[in-house]
Length: 191
Image 1 (cartoon, rainbow, N blue to C red):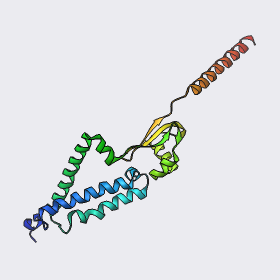
Image 2 (image 1 turned 90 degrees about the horizontal axis):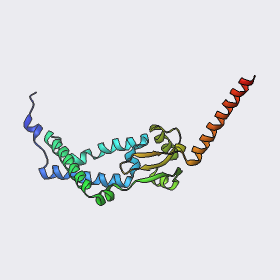
Image 3 (image 1 turned 180 degrees about the vertical axis):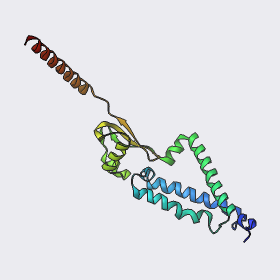
Image 4 (image 1 turned 30 degrees about the vertical axis):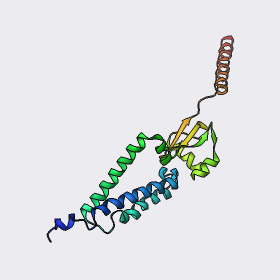
């Protein structure tokens, strides 16, 4: 059976519709993901990941419609890529607009204190926060001074620094150990 390149490349939809469909779906998904929250973007659990996978398949037909031609798919993909490039450049040059579209970071931990109301609003459990901390090398939340869920869905952690009290405590312990060693050495020398 010979390959019919004309049929393979001939779009079954008008060019305007091939351009408009992906643009409408793009705008819808940006708004829907913004409303769904940063947690979905963070993919903190398997359920969120599955939603993102199924979401792409769900909107596929809305993007290309009944057009199964090669050129229809390429036009749809090019439209999405071009629209995304334009949006990214516009947002990069207009900080207030970027903040309105992407949102602001959520402070999950402030000065070592878990912000339970913020966690609840973001749909993140303490266990998920702890797991995210483990992934970034923290053994416990006690090691973390501050944590933020950024607009892109990434949790950023800031390590807790030793306080003056902690530093003094460690210095006292070190001096006591030196005194013990000196006393042990004197005791050995006199015996």
